[in-house]
Length: 224
Ligand code: DC
Image (cartoon, rainbow, N blue to C red; front, top):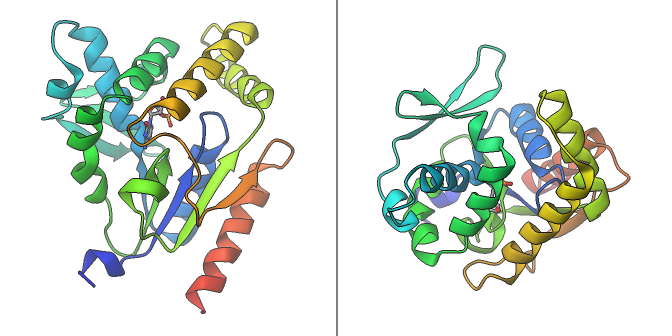
């Protein structure tokens, strides 16, 4: 076993709006572990591809000057060079662009090591689509979080309105459906639950009980 393989990892995969980002961050905070929001890497490449339409996304993903920081209240921030892109990478336009660039195997390959570098002591909670199937296939605990498309669109709508951004529920339903299809049907690391993942449906369950469920599973594994 290499030194990084002994560092525990919990993977939380699932479609957008399943609540996996919130759940994964809460689990990381409870355990005092590192947190990887792998979608942010694809979102930054998506943002760059909108800004640089003449450059291939694969080239844009080669040398990302990307940094994850924390706001004073502990909220994760994403910086691209000297620019705080935390808000701009969450727009619907960037969400769609991220989903497109994420289907490119060359982009995925360019981002593998940057993601594995997050595996640092005392442990890592990794949020994404292929954390349990590809990037951390040896993780001790794998969660696949789902929710109905309608519930996910409703959550996204609420989030955007709270941020003061405009949002239309029907458009969101269509966009989320399109994105799901692209993420599931792509040939490079399609969205699917790892064979050894525990599938949790969060449609009618609140975030805190999913977090508690994951923490008790982790406890059971740790105490063997
Ligand atoms: O989790 P998210 O919504 O921030 O992800 C943005 C996009 O990136 C989404 O379309 C799926 C893609 N993605 C991926 O292909 N693999 C990951 N590990 C994380 C995200």
